Length: 335
Ligand SMILES: Nc1nc2c(ncn2[C@@H]2O[C@H](COP(=O)(O)OP(=O)(O)OP(=O)(O)O)[C@@H](O)[C@H]2O)c(=O)[nH]1
Image (tube, rainbow, N blue to C red; front, side, top):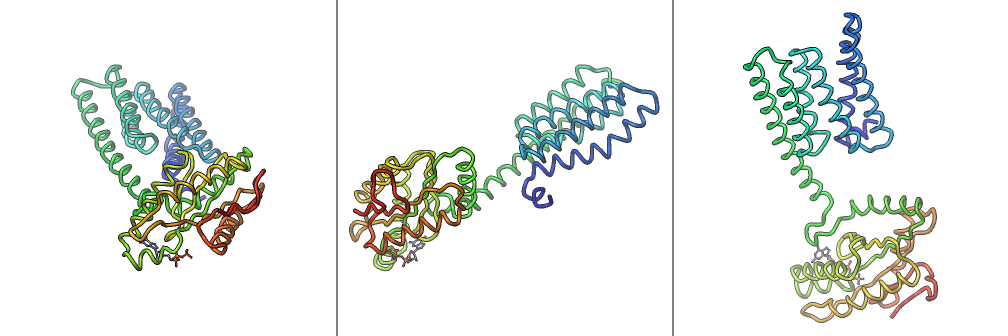
């Protein structure tokens, strides 16, 4: 539970909102009922139950995007209704809502929700004692919203930058091994659920050390970048390329097997053979391919692709080796 809270920022905000509304609004609901104010009591009770329900939905389904949106709308509209029903003292509830929206939905939607809530109260007008109170409320609510907006924008851009640093290989711009582990697990779960085939292709540049030793690391880096560009151009947008480490890459191909997979690999190999070059001449690549088997673990899948790559190296490099027998082909497609 703590792990989920730490990993999912929006879930933690939803949980804080659920817990604080339970602890903060319930006493008011009881007090309103005791005072005989049934309308205010019913509104408070509905708010607590819906916010708590939204929190439970987020925990059960993991869908924090939808529950965040619902909770932001409920919190803002609830605060507006409370202010209208109980008067100016209810206005205080809107301030935490104006800040929380930015953590529950994207900044643009949060701004729209905040402006709608402030506008609804100003237009309704009866909540305020006089115009000075009305415009003081408008100004302070706008300042809170603007500050929260600026903070949310900055937090979002910092989060995106951190995510990029943690998941993207800076040299080639493809995803790194860390993201690969996550995506292979997702692919395996998707394959299990839908039966869609997934192929894992492991590519390793041949004699790359020689390129570095003879022409320098700068040339080696260019070869790595060229390989990525060529693979990206010869595969579909839905195919994912990862840098596994050093001069080794992993390509994840969804929805292709049998003759289709053989054709894709022939095309990739054809393009690499034609275009991969450096000042010392052509560069070759060895490739191992494994199709995910039913019920197979990601570890075993990777191991089989790695085994096929090892075979390709052992058999003389510059070739594609399939770990599985493809329909209408031989187990090894060495050319
Ligand atoms: N230029 C450059 N070289 C790298 C990078 N990462 C790893 N390398 C080099 O990649 C080379 C890998 O060498 P080896 O593992 O011996 O493989 P190889 O020479 O390709 O031999 P085979 O794979 O057996 O064909 C090493 O010289 C590493 O220094 C990088 O980001 N840039």
